[in-house]
Image (cartoon, rainbow, N blue to C red):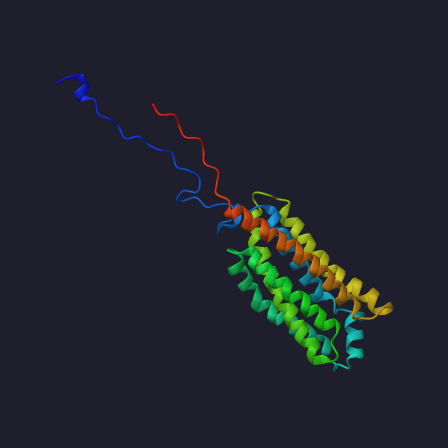
Length: 230
């Protein structure tokens, strides 16, 4: 038997290409692999929701109560009308937003904008409470999707968590401050109109982020050069 006949031909092993099984692209279902800039739209929506939550605190709420002739517990009902839908929407935003963050952030802002406009133009308590419920549900969606995007970034980008949290806290603080100043001099409806303008900006930013996500996800991953044959 010759030496050539004893030689066995080994099968050639081809290295796995990007996007093979077991790998998840950056736009895939794992939030930890997403870029940090994807947070911009949800964080803007979450901060706007926080602003609307505390906007009715203090002189703003008292001015609404006087103008619309709400009962003694009218301010409490404004909080309940906001917080109850928000509590229901947070888990929805977290579950769906883990897979499709932009698809959750956009409807959240879409709810916040007309809800704020409805409150600003409210002729009575019914439309006021409806606007609070709509904005509360939108805020809950934004808080849920922001949470599931921020938590996985904690180990990779330590600045993302304090930045997102700071934006939401800023919204909470600015609500009663801006409400108190504008309600005293320009009326209680103006802060909600400002919320509408901020929401339009957030909507545009989120829409641009969504277009970038769709563009990159549709682009095929770059293939590595083929290894030279022996």
